[in-house]
Image (cartoon, rainbow over all chains, first blue to last red; front, side, top):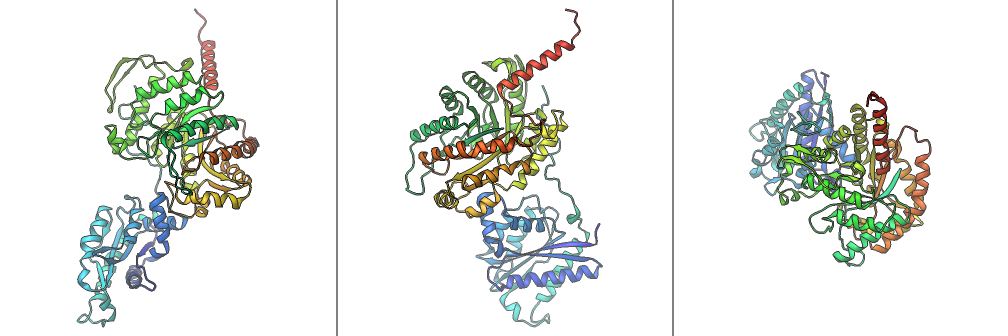
Length: 210
Length: 371
C-alpha cells in the first residue's frame, strides 16, 4: 500500500467565486491536514463542474466523455476519498451535480469514502444532505461519512467560537472521518480490468455446448 | 479489404428545408443507394433492423433479397440483426434463404439493438440482453451446422430432431460478425467461434475500441483460430466530402447539428476530433481512414454511414460517387501496402467453401486407406 492517498474533490457551484468551492477547499484542507497528522501525504484533484458543464451535457447526449471529462471521471472513481460539495437548489443537489454523477458507471464508486458537503442561502435546507445526497451515494455503494457539512451564507460571517458558528468544528469532525477511511483505502492502487467477464460467463451460454 | 456502407434506415426530416421523405420514398431510396454502392465499386451494403419509427427496416432479408436480385457482386449484410429478440430458428431460416437467393452474397452482423422497449415488445427482458445474445447464437450456430438438432436452453422451447430449412448454400453457413459497442462478452463470443468482430465505433472515441479490438484479437488467438493478427475485424466510419474542406463543413453542419444521435451535443469539430467522422475534402477522409490500421491493426471490413440525418438522396448518391471513385481506390492501395501476408481477407462464401473443401481433402488424405 502506498503512503500517498488520492483525494478527489467535486465542487458543483455555478458562480465564480463560489461559496461551494470555498467549503470544498476548507473540507479538503482539513482532510489533508488530518491525513498528514497520520503520516500520510495526500494528492488532491479538484474538479470544478462548472468547467465541465458542456462536456457533461455532451456525455449525456452522446454516451461518451470528452478527454477532459474522462480525466475528471478517472480522478473521482480512482480516488481513496471524495469530497463532494453541491449547492442546494430547489430542495436538492444541483442538476449539474446529478448530471455528473449520472455519467459515472454506477459500479465505479463502490467502497469510496465520501464526505458530503452542501451550501445554501439559509440553514433551512441543511437536511438536504441527509435526504438527497446520502441516499444517492448509498445507492452507488459509496461510504458516506456520518458527518455532513452544510454551510449557509450566514456561516461565512460568524466567529470561530462554537457559540456563534459550529462550521469549523463540523469541518474538522467530517474531515477526520473521511481521513480515517481514506487512510485505510486501497482504491487508488487497484488495477481495474475493463474486460473482466462476469463470473460463470460461458461463450456458449448457461446450458453449455450441445 | 472490403469497403462498404451501412445504414440504420432512419426517416429523418431534412433540417435545411423541413421536408421528410415518406416511408415509400425512403425505402425506394435505400434500394437506389444500395445499387449505387455496387455501381461505384463498393463491396458491401449492410442494413439495420429496427421495430419502431423513425426507422423502416423491420424486415431486412426482404429488402436485401430485393437488392440482391438487382445487383451482381455486392455483399448483402446487416447492421445489425437482433440476436436477442429474434427467434434464432427464424434467423437461421431467413438468412439461409437470403444466402441461396443471393448466390452466397449474404453475411450478417449480430447485435443487441439500441431501443430498450424492443425486448418487451418481443416478450424478452432487457436485463437478459447478453445471455440472450449468447444462448440464441449458440443455437443458430448449431442449426446451420447440424442437419438434425436436439437442443434445450432457457429462452425458447426445446427442439428434438429439428431441421432448419433451407439448409445453408453448399452446406456452408453465412459468415457472421458480432457487433459491439462496449461489451467484452460479445468480443469473447466472437473470438470463441472464430467469427468476425465489428466494432461500431462511429459515435465513440477510438481509444475505447482500440482496447476492445485488441481484446478480441488476443482471445481469437487464445481459442486457436489463428494469430491475433489474423482475427477478422470490421470498423464503422462516417464521412461527408466536397472538393474543398470548407464547402463540406458548411453543407454538412446543419445535418450534424440536428442528427438524431449526437445532434445538439458536441460541436462538429470536437466530434470529428474524437470519433471516426470525417468532414472535408476526399484527401482528408483518405488521410483519416488510412491511419485506422495504425490504431486497430490490419483489418478486413470498413463500413461507412452515409445516408442518415435527413441527407437527401441526391446528396447521398453524390457522396457515394466521391467515396467510390476518389476515396476507396486510394484506400485500397494504402491498405494493401505493407499488409502482412498472414492477414486474411474477410471471409466470403467462395473462400469458406474452399476452406471447407480443403479441410475435407486433408481429412481424407489423413484417413487410413482401408475402404
